Image (cartoon, rainbow, N blue to C red):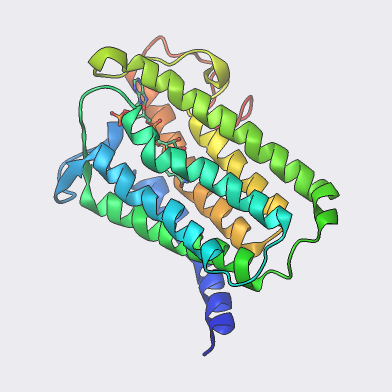
Length: 253
Ligand SMILES: NC(=O)c1ccc[n+]([C@@H]2O[C@H](COP(=O)([O-])OP(=O)(O)OC[C@H]3O[C@@H](n4cnc5c(N)ncnc54)[C@H](OP(=O)(O)O)[C@@H]3O)[C@@H](O)[C@H]2O)c1
């Protein structure tokens, strides 16, 4: 089996597995953060966990571009910049901005996150630098590129702003949970997840690629069940929780 066949098979399997993981996560909430519980093996400090999980997504993706061995189109470099914009922040800045006291994260979760990133990096990095037919300059005028780029940037701002609201609740070493307010928290309980999904569906549209779509679908498979769990948890924990606030889709759900 050559790499093209192997790549196509992996892509199909990856789409299939996302459906299985989505169903599993509806019943088993990933045991970190407020949903942490005993019985999931050894843990490490969550800041270390975030760096270990997310750093490969920044470094390995960059290595595909460095080793491409051919000139890449301007649009492809824009995709590279979007990816690195997200992952340099997620791997090396976000873990140290979260505030509060150090918290444990199961090694199992870190391992899943690491594996998730490895496959997504391979599928997307290899597609953009080797298997894609290329993106001529006129692609940057295509409505799919423009819409996808806008979605990514809007999602990035929503994600960053929403994570910053949470970090402020933990400023000065304050522990525990409070009801977040402002920004997209007016509409949903987990706007950071909504922003993240916007980013990667935008990336999929801008690259118009199955690899991008697989990553977006996996992001939704991870984050929609978790947003539902967060929403239920907020309603259980805070009797005054705003009744009009939805879980993840403004005004709907
Ligand atoms: N692409 C993907 O598949 C994927 C998967 C997972 C996460 N992510 C992204 O990674 C980031 C973090 O994810 P996460 O699952 O850790 O998000 P989260 O559950 O919203 O928590 C984010 C941070 O805020 C704190 N926090 C949450 N709610 C709080 C509240 N009501 N009061 C005070 N502090 C609060 C959390 O503390 P605790 O840790 O103590 O709960 C944590 O430090 C998000 O931007 C998310 O989109 C992406």
